[in-house]
Image (cartoon, rainbow, N blue to C red; front, side, top):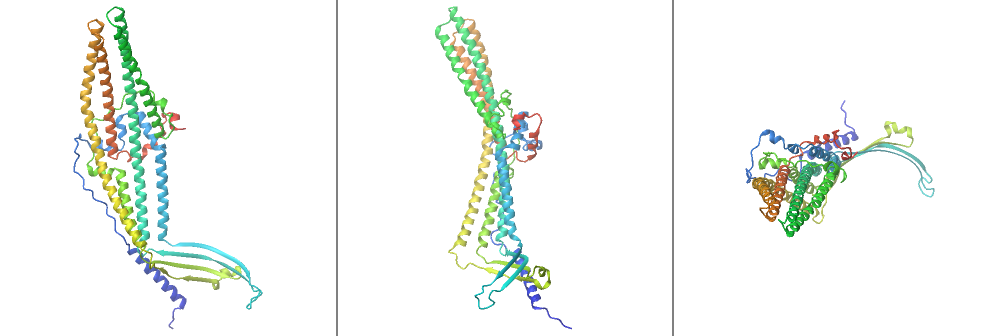
Length: 495
């Protein structure tokens, strides 16, 4: 016996086939340009000379601060990675972007809601038909709606959101690179200020001794009052320098405390004990220009923003095309609540909705133009920042090389000035010379020692700048675990 499909089965089968067909179409069509990473035209080598490096030195980029062999610096940087508020803010924004990306991706699937209704009603008695009629209705079921992404607008939005999340992750890494460099530079500057303060105090001691010599010479009739007054004035001028350096030390310790995630005064006592200034590694690892582009997280963030801007062109382009959605409703309706679970109460509806904007005053076309302009701007930002990054490396190399050359001359100047000061002092004590050569020799020695300390600080600063320019310091997030080290000062940890 031949059977024929019932009408409702035919409609349901046709609806299912239509849904499957549209789903296949939505998976195959995506408007807008596909993204291709930019290929930067880079130099093959650096213009500034630089020393060679080994594979082990290359690995030191991950924890470059440890090359200074300063345990307190290691502790400060570990604490900063664990507690710095700017890093915490960046992490919160990254988590927010990830959640927003999930919201956008949810648009690719159907939306389903479940509900139930129970109501009782009575019609007016003044109606011609069924006056005063009374009815009860119970309904339970679910409704679903699925907007088909036929032209890839939602998929492009997800693509843009993915790139945006990756850009924020790179922003956080770039912030970590800057934080490590800033804290290390402040720490090195503080140690240099302490070294300069020690030099100034040595100079004051020498000037006090010279003033005493001038006074004894005057008592023996071998000197003059002018020499005594000149020696006193030189000593008083030197005594005006320590307050300035002490203020610098306090300011830098406050900055270090905040960068480490605490309060300004947390580390002031711990940093008050002077230690030798930071040394510089004899050979700093240096990558090729193309490797710098891959290492620097700020450039990677620029590239991801370019990818997001390119995907937004597809989002804007998809707005020009029709929108299709599939509403579906399945439920049970009955006048008695116990009849809701019978087969006769079952009802369903399925359909297809489509809409197309016929005229929008050029809004969709303007959206595409705006998105294209945004992508063009993002590409120019990336190209500009690549050049700035390479300039940062060249500038750091220039500072390193110039300071190393200066230190050869300054070290010789300190040695010669020391010998000249000793000789002038011996001659003056023997009464064979006036006091002016002693003052000149001591002033020259102090200036040479101070200039050498500043040059050594400049070399350390150049090294830190080079590490920052290379994008070093974000590869090892596990350093934050070191902040739990038991030898950290309790107040500095912020407990």
